[in-house]
Image (cartoon, rainbow, N blue to C red; front, top):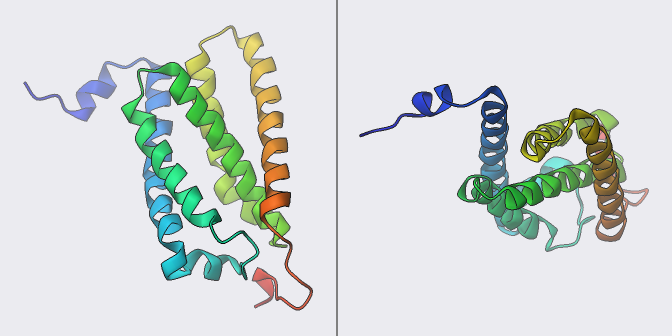
Length: 174
């Protein structure tokens, strides 16, 4: 008996459908970006696109690509293990705050952070659905967790990404 995706989605509750949809969006995007990150040392496409003149440590893109590939895989391979999916989602929040800090650190326009930033509410929605707790408890866990993730990513960005020198043109000044 063949089961198609529409039959699976039709049997899901609204919260499960939301969880599935956001994890699917994340996994598709992360699969594509994983390939870019892993191949960055050979292609230079990300550094070129972002005007990153070796501002980030040389191993940063391949490691980020590998971890994004693990997240894309883990989002569905371990979907029945709540703790694993929650860990992946909190990592996604931290990683994408890091992407925002990366662009700010390189002197890009703050609006550039909106592109990676869209994955933060996706991940927080999955976390809220997966925690399946009273709504008022989510008002404590989600903001505190988000702040912790933002602080961790800010610290890592300060360590792993050096600001451009004054001689280097900023992305929007080319």
